[in-house]
Length: 176
Image (cartoon, rainbow, N blue to C red):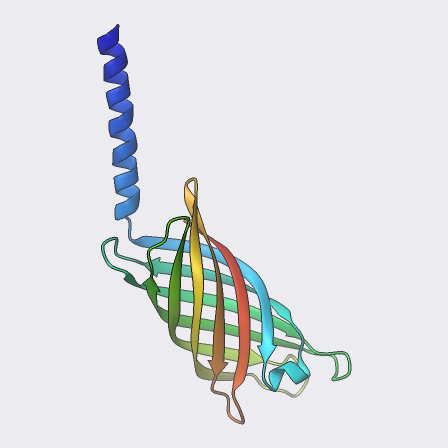
């Protein structure tokens, strides 16, 4: 009887330790996120706080603090009441470097990179523009059972024709 219990306990410990090692060795992550988009600078005079959705694909080697992440995002910001009736839609794809710092309950990280953005004011006679930009921010990852969550804030600066378009998304997401 003691041998059977010892064998079962050993098998369970071996399986759980193997599962955690396999999970730790998987450097690829996929995530979905959403949050508030806050206009900055002159853009804040025209549009108010809106929302955004994001899909992300990351690569973070297990033994290094550096990784990469590609994000696709959709932002929607509505016009302020005294300006008119339109919606600013910004669709972007960013390629980012990630520097993860060690943490106990939460793992903080720095993120930044280059992006390509399409801005459309959704007003008759207005054309959309496609421009390059940069982004930089900070965040933290939190582990839950089977997946992780993250919270981050990033500053985006799009190099538009007349002047830069700037906004600050505050994001909460789930990583698989």
